Length: 592
Image (cartoon, rainbow, N blue to C red; front, top):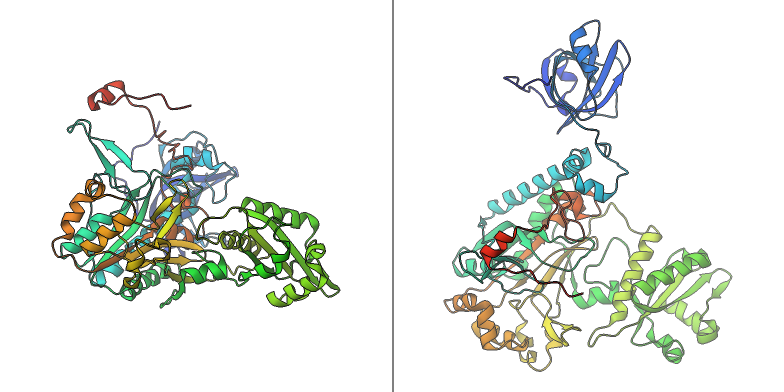
């Protein structure tokens, strides 16, 4: 027979008990984490949100409570009345290790089936099992800490922005479809037959309208939805910090976000001090092979194309050749070099060309192609020392107006940095990346598309290139990067009607198409739009990094899998035919 809670009131959290609580009478409530039966004494570890407290049931002192404790099993929900005493021998492994509670009464509030995995920080269960039983997974202390951290980071962000004059304003979840890159998530309207709402990919248009509305400084912790193809660490729905300012310089936005990140990082005791360094987009690509460079280690890329010109046809090299110097890797075995070559191939390399520099000399499979003197000059040029391994690579595929060798070499740099333990995990290296290209080439559409979105501002001196050389146009966009992760993107927006019209034209949109997609926004632009700009930061990614996790699923209460499935709620799911009939929707067979 289970007990009822009645008027029993919890006095303390289990994990909050300390030596100063000794000799106090307490009422604790939580889950049985572990039970140990020593005959006369039964010990249980009682777990709640704050941590664990040890409870002692003494048969001699309280035989009734002891007898009841014999029925306890893992994950039973109980309330315990008792007195806090100091332990004879402290347990330094837990925060409550100086005390224990001698139970006088036990209330069994609910029982539990045997869980499919232990409720511990480290579990061996697969992620699929953990997500299917997420309500159990969330009981684990590690997940609890992550969710608490998420709360504290968001709370600190809200406080920081409120203090400098930002209004938190909600924007619609049901809106019209305005394609912004990914597919929209569509919601059929029952009232307006045959028409659809879309869930917002971001509040982009609404936050710009708020600037037209003289809100001046807006922010929102908002939910966004993108029906993207499966990716390892993306979610169908995600959370971002969205903000916008009127009359800003780019630097004004940087200072606001640096202030926000200083406050957010302080939650975990990390000192992030602005101003953050700035890197031009092209410089970041040239030096690190990425527009989100990991700056916690060096090993910068070097263009060594000139050394490979004589063997371009022999090695079937197209485009440029980039090299990095891997310190201490000259001792790598043939197996390790083969694994490196396989990784490079998966990263899009035509091939990987290695040169070992040792005290005895220089050796490489390239010697028959470049000659001993050529290898020596290559080593001197890249600054390789004895013990170093030179790793050169060229890209397999070429994209117009893009040096694809940089992207491939950038991935190899990160791979080597990890394998050689060159990354200082204690560092927090922020950077602003600026000077992005306004357009990027779409291989599928064989045309130029917005690198960010069609409302991104353009450098005034590049306006004349919009129609003639779009690949040379620079945007007023910027990214915030931390330790090789893009935290967010933003830009100074287009606020003039004439420039916005030219942008749509450059993207191949007719006046009719632009009005069909963005009509209400274009109308708003005609009523005195101020210069404005903003940014959106990925909250999930920020918290993931601060928590030291490798996946955003570890900091989201109810995440979906990489296949966009909620295993716990079994979503998505089919619906009744009557619901579809009411909406006037028929399900077609998918193309095989």
